[in-house]
Image (cartoon, rainbow over all chains, first blue to last red; front, side, top):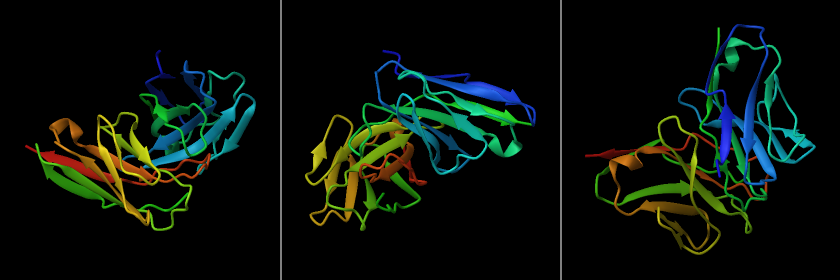
Amino acid sequence: NAGVTQTPKFQVLKTGQSMTLQCAQDMNHEYMSWYRQDPGMGLRLIHYSVGAGITDQGEVPNGYNVSRSTTEDFPLRLLSAAPSQTSVYFCASSRKWAGTGELFFGEGSRLTVL
Amino acid sequence: DAKTTQPPSMDCAEGRAANLPCNHSTISGNEYVYWYRQIHSQGPQYIIHGLKNNETNEMASLIITEDRKSSTLILPHATLRDTAVYYCIAPFGNEKLTFGTGTRLTIIP
């Protein structure tokens, strides 16, 4: 199993550009989520999904869109990048999150917005 | 989620036991306590979780007080590779799993 795979690992954008961070898991996990981590800070939840076709907002959803058309994939879209979105983004998945599941994280995608 | 409180930083000598405390005084009866760690800027890694009883696995031990208001993660023989940020969380079936800023543990040679 590859686990949770994130692409790209590094990306530089200009203000106003759009892009999609990809996340895929091969563990048949129902729950997937996206976090961002700013320097010296903890992880903040952006969006999450409890299954295909179901998504919901986390702590900091503004400026980001998600969709979950398959169990395996959970892409994060930045519609119009801003310098404040410069961060490290982590995707995570869990078999069935109900407070009793272990989260598996990807290696992160490092985004710089100029 | 129950609110958790951790010291911002700790040091531990290499080879000694590292004891990381976490206060979760508002925890409810069905709420598990989870521990994760993040080495450098890698994705967080699951360590252990527990409800009431003490737990042990190949990575660490988790001691939960009888009133469940606090817990301690124990790394029995700390190595330099255990230098990381350690997060204690108590999500209680909450799909919005949130992390605080954790404890930055530094293992000193």
